[in-house]
Length: 206
Image (cartoon, rainbow, N blue to C red; front, top):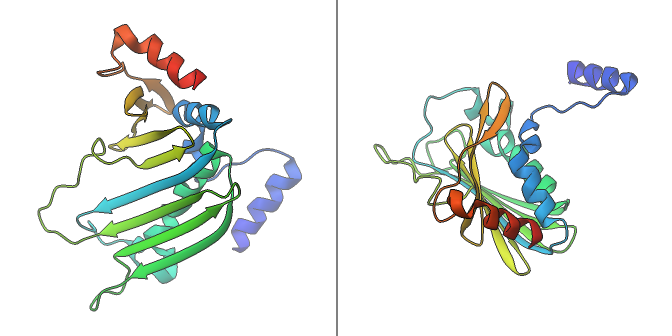
């Protein structure tokens, strides 16, 4: 913490903006969702990250040192939701599941109360299934945001490919970071090239 505090003091003294570990919020896709939700009443946000296996064991599985995956990726999830919805966290509740024989948690679940009275749930699930194929991100959104009158689904496919839908209709399909800069792939059906303008208008005007 000594080093972190020294960096923080230097940044404050210089009067500059600094963002560490939360760069994804600057994606045009997430900013588009934020703009759309600006005048909406968010009721419920869901974020789920299931995984069939833990992969190679790293420092991340040492919860005393890292705080575990829930802290490592959970802080990103909370940051994205706060950014997209414009709401903050009022109250939090956490649950961890550590089966006998494991020295780290396989599953964790969090409930949050938002400033507008809406709620959010965040879950990390590792079900230790050898040979299982993880469900595609197209079948389960990373974020499901339900507002009074509709819903937004945000998908993360692979490492850098992001998409989102409004009430089941693709709006941005395949925003990819290339050498640090985002680009957007053509929209897929049913929001194909011929109807891209109509879909964009729908999401912009609500």
